[in-house]
Image: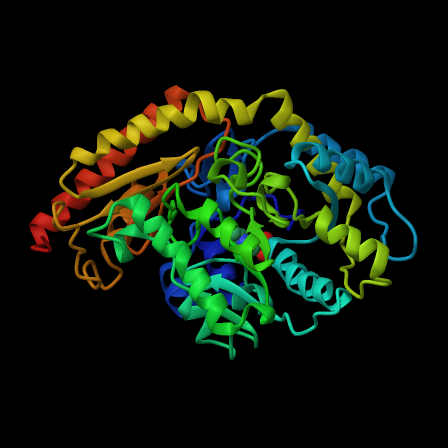
Length: 466
Ligand SMILES: *Cc1c(COP(=O)(O)O)cnc(C)c1O
C-alpha cells in the first residue's frame, strides 16, 4: 500500500486483519468480532497503537525484546548484512562469517562445557532438534532403546509437533493427536497447586522425586532425557523451590540421563545470569535458546550442545541427518551478534542481577498486602502475581467470572485500558519487562499494576465474586 497517500484507519486495518490473517493461539471468530489492537511502533519499553495510545510493554513483546525497542545497533547490523550477503546456507560445506562469529561468541557467554551450537529458526525448531539429537546420541552409543523424553505438565516448549508434545499444555495435546510417542510428563513443581501444607524446600525435593518415580516406572534404560524450563514461562512464571533443580540434576546424573534446559525465555539475562540454569543451580547437557538471542528483532533459535554430546556426534556420529534452510541465517546471526554485544556493553546481566531485579522484587513484595494478592514473586525480571479470593487459604476465584474469562482476563482488560501490557495465565498475572528498564520505569509500572489490581478488586466487590 505504499502508493496510498492517506494512512489506513484502525477500522480498515481491523477489517483486513479479520478477513485474511489467522493469528496464532487465537479464537478466530471471536477476535474478528472484537477487532485486533493494531500495534504500529515502539521505543524503549513502550509501544504505540494505531490510535496513538501508549502502552508500557511489561511482557517484552513475547518475552523476547530484552534490549528494548529502537536499538539502532541491531537495525544497522541487519541492513549491513543484507547488503553484503542476505542469505547463504550452511548445508554444503559452506559457512558465513556472522554464523561463525556468533557460534564463537555463544561459546564464551554460555556456561563452561558448551563449545558447539546448532542453529535453527525458532525455539520450537530448537526443541525438535533436541528430540532428534538426544535419540541420535543414544543410538551412536549403542543404546537405541533410550527413546523416552520426560517433560512436565504445564510446560511450554513450542508449537511444532515435537515442541507441542514436549510441552505439557492439555489444550494443545487435545488438538492434532499429540503427544507423539515416547514423550511422557510428570507434574510441575508448582507449590500453590501441589505443595500446600509442606515447606517450599520440602516440596521441591518431593516434586523432583516425581522424576525418579517416572524413570523407574519406564525403566532407566528406556529414558533418553529430561527437559524443563528453569522457570516455566507461558505456564504462568512458576518459580520452583530452590531445592528442585539441584535434586533433578542429581537424579539425572544417577541414572545417566541427559538434562535439557529450555532457555528460550530464561536465557540472555532474564533471570540475572546469562542463563537460567546458572540462577537455578544446575548444569544441563543441552540448552535450547531463541527469543532473547536476537531480542526478537529477527527470528533465530538454536541448541547449545554440551561436550558430552558434541564429542560423540562429531567423532562417532557420521552425518547428522537434520537441519533447516535458515540454520545459521547470516542476517539473523548478524543481528544476534549485535544484540549479544549490546547486552555485554550495557552490562544488562549485571543491571538485572544487582539493580532492577532486586528493585522489582521489593516492588512485588509490597503488593502482598493487597486484598486480591495471594502471592507475588519474582526471579530477575520475571514476575507473577497470584490473584485469589481468600488470601489466607489461597482460594481461587470461580474460573468463569467476568464473562467466562476468569479473574486474570478481567485484570488484563484493565491493564490494556490503562496503558500496561501484562499477561494473564489463569489466575496469575505475569510480567517480563525489557532488561533495559530503569528504576523510575519500574515505579511507573508498579503504579499501573496497583491501579489495575484496585480496579479488578472494585469489579469483584461490585459483581459479588468475592
Ligand atoms: C516461546 C518458547 C518456545 C518456542 O519458541 P518459538 O520461537 O515460538 O518456536 C520454546 N520454549 C519456551 C520456553 C518458550 O517460551
